[in-house]
Image (cartoon, rainbow, N blue to C red):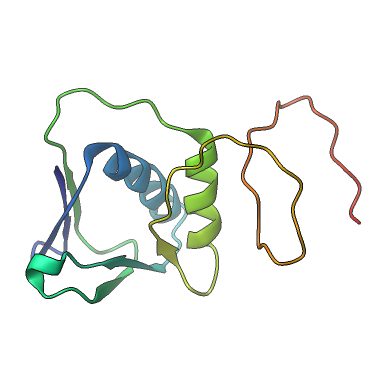
Amino acid sequence: MGKFIYDSSLRVEFEDRLLAHLQAVIVAKVRRGESFTFTWKDDISTGGGRTAVYIQPRVSLVFMFQGGRMPPLNPAWLHALSYNANTVRGLYVVPEPDGAVRPPTHHEEMVFAEVAADAPIPAPQ
């Protein structure tokens, strides 16, 4: 389990693979000077509930990994997390997509799938 440390006072544990994906999304937004909220569910051992922090370029962030190797990043998961971070609700943890591709329905916000860079862009329906 790695640790996410916010403003040197708030510490929360995340599995290293998830933490690596969160780091990529958070650092990309902070580099662009974007502010956003990051929300997660608290562990039941600490009382449950949820915590939300406001991430902005001037806040101190630390990503501490238990393992020494950087896990491979899943582009579909990065896309899902980035999509959430760019909404009013802000960044929140979603399960890693399994890679299944299916057409979107009107009741879903977004279906995540990898697309080749040279693939044609479908026309809006």
